[in-house]
Length: 193
Image (tube, rainbow, N blue to C red; front, side, top):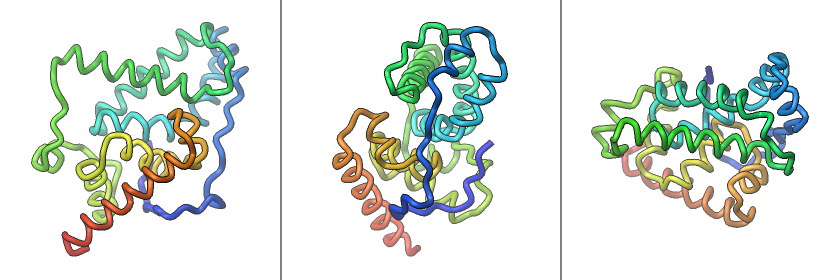
């Protein structure tokens, strides 16, 4: 489980370590090597959680999809073709599982203020200020901006990793990130925070 202790929205690369995934892990996972799956999980769980949370917008659904994602990775790892973007492949699996879940439930995610305030389960966020910032991020910024902010703040990814995995130029990713921060700042100032 992720602990959302504090959000540092400043661009501080010295605090971030680039996520480096050994693509040979997928071959090992494909051969039922549970130790390799555990290593892959340990390396990517935080980033995958942050990414899936941007899609599901609900802690419980995020955990369900996260679990299903690793099960799917285990069953499909033998099909993985090393291309230098293992995280993008994992994101694709997670997004497809999310879309499948939505289709099965035949529901549309409603992001109205009352939905977020009454329905989102952010039990992993213990600090009220962090909870407010996270809820604000989910209601004020666009889906793509939300992905970028969450992958940076919660997932601990560097901006160049986020850009590469979302197939965006770094300058575009940084622009969207800073635009999202400005929206958050304005929103928080209006609320008196």
